[in-house]
Image (cartoon, rainbow, N blue to C red):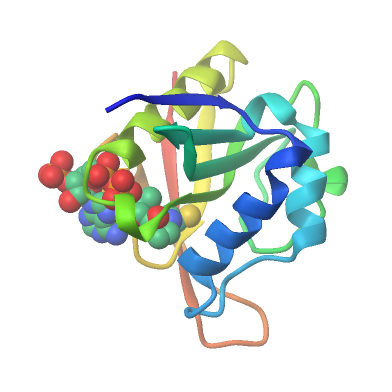
Amino acid sequence: MAHKIRQASTFDLPEIIALENEAFGARGTAESSAVIESRLKVFPEGCLVVESNGKTIGYASSEKWSQEYEPLLDIDPFARHAKNGHMFCISSFAIRLTHRGKGFGLFLLDHLIEIARHHSCAAMILSTVQAQEFYSKRGFQITASLLKPNSNIALTVMKLDLK
Ligand SMILES: CC(C)(COP(=O)(O)OP(=O)(O)OC[C@H]1O[C@@H](n2cnc3c(N)ncnc32)[C@H](O)[C@@H]1OP(=O)(O)O)[C@@H](O)C(=O)NCCC(=O)NCCS
C-alpha cells in the first residue's frame, strides 16, 4: 500500500477538520476550526498529514513552547508558540477510524519525534483522554492529570525526554 507523510497546508483544512470531528467529536474534545487553522500558520513544519493511496487518513499538529504549560485544548497557538522554544507540544493527533491498528499512528508519531529532535527540543508533551498506551510505546510517561475546563473530561499529561 502506498502511503506517505507530508506537511499539511490550509488546503488540507476540510479533511483535517473532518478527521478531528470523527476522532474527538463524540468525546467532547474536538477543537475549534479557528485554532486548527492557526496551527497550520504558526508552525507549518509541525503540522503533518498521512496519505494512503492518495487519501488523507491521519494528521498531527504541534507547536514549540519556551516553557512548560498545561497542554489544554483550544489554546491560541499564536499566544504559545515560540520560534526558539525547546518544549515540543503535540496539540492534536488522529488516524481515521477505518485505518487504525495498521501502524499509521506510530509512523506519524515517529515523524513528529524526528521533527522535535531536528528542532533541538529537550522534551515533548501532550495530553490525551485515552491513548496513553499508544504513546507509552515510544517512551512517553504520565506526568499529570488535568480536567478539561468546565467539564468532567480527564486529560492525562504525558512527556518524553529527548535528552
Ligand atoms: C491513538 C491513535 C492515533 C493510534 O493510531 P493507530 O494507527 O491505530 O496506531 P498504530 O496502529 O500505530 O498502533 C500502534 C500500537 O499502539 C496501540 N494502540 C493504538 N491506539 C491505542 C489506544 N487508543 N489505546 C491503547 N493502545 C493503542 C496498538 O494496539 C499498537 O500496539 P501493538 O504495536 O502492540 O500492536 C488512533 O487510535 C486515534 O486516532 N485515536 C483517536 C484520537 C486519539 O486518541 N488521538 C491521540 C490523542 S491526541
